[in-house]
Picture 1 (cartoon, rainbow, N blue to C red):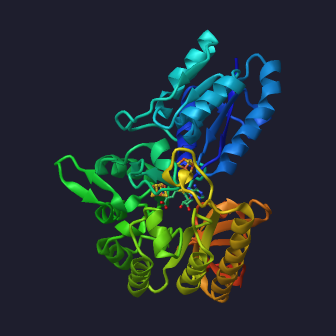
Picture 2 (picture 1 turned 180 degrees about the vertical axis):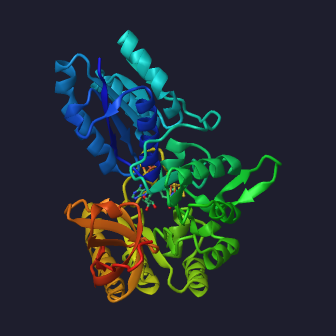
Picture 3 (picture 1 turned 45 degrees about the vertical axis):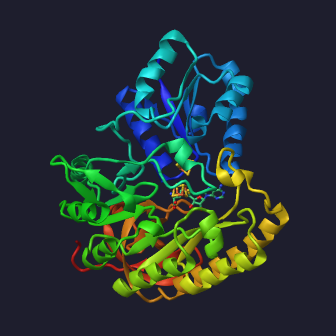
Length: 447
Ligand code: SAH
Ligand code: SF4
Ligand code: F3S
């Protein structure tokens, strides 16, 4: 029987990359990807648990599939990802969604082909969710979303246990891949036409891989080695924790042309007291000092952040510290979140949870400040010429191309789709809140 699969990704870039790997494995099994869920007979939901609305979106989508699962005998419904690493979710699935065919976790996605074969041949229902990672599995295929750029895991898991966060429980302890394995993967990607790599980890600057000679390799050193690979023109990473941002890394920002001049540096709150109750291990002053050093080394660096509003016990005064932080750093952009209770994390049991209406009111004030500053910063780009890696036609309008600057700003401009995957120069004509508009500069000599 011909099999088509569809994967829905609910989470972050690591989740996205897991989906790329699953798609790669399924294609090796001879299955073909479907653009729409209704065209597929293998459906995979790759879930996220970082906030409650991610949980809700998943259950909403899953609920809609019940009818189809009853009608279509050959339909296979699989669920995986971070939500599955929590026992209470597995219990809910067993009780309310017994028709789901396959449940697996974040530590065993490499087992998908075997598990799926068993489901198909035996028509069995399988739940296999190991609560710990085995050895890191290397050499898995991946079906990339973009031809010209790729996501590359350099480490897995997280040891930080920020008190609000579920990730250390769903992704397990921190493990760094071997530098040789990472370099080999990136060499292969470069040969395949990849020009930009995004190095992934929950806290990439605590990367400490062990090379074959038994030496520990730092994140900064790893970047230098990647920069030597021919064909790779841009290197980015996501995410770095302020407490581990080393002077060595700042030096690489200053001296390595291939390392993009952009950093995502989640601050979470502007109040030292809240930062400490979040277990973030930095203070308002030490965070600002890192920003100062980064900008001293690389004046044009763009900085983005994550901010949580309404952490338990947050006072109006402490929230104002967050506003002052945003005003002081002047972020290029910021992802803002309402604090969401995550079962099993320390902050879930803190008394003094902030009422929803207070959270929302603070959130709105924060967002309008963040957006105003983004628009002001983007307006400064008007008239500048930026080198852009073309990602393809824009999502909203197929006559428009979309690409990113070195500083990770999204740029839309008119151009031929054949430019996809190429670097072009674009004159910025308008800076908006979330993106830039530009005009392609035609070169006499095509590069
Ligand atoms: N490892 C990354 C973050 C991964 S989660 C880091 O430390 O930077 C992405 C973002 O989700 C976090 O930075 C945080 O701002 C937000 N987040 C995590 N748990 C949350 C919760 N319980 N409620 C609201 N936002 C949360
Ligand atoms: Fe979560 Fe903190 Fe780890 Fe980021 S560093 S994944 S916020 S525990
Ligand atoms: Fe979500 Fe898991 Fe990523 S909880 S944010 S998909 S690591």
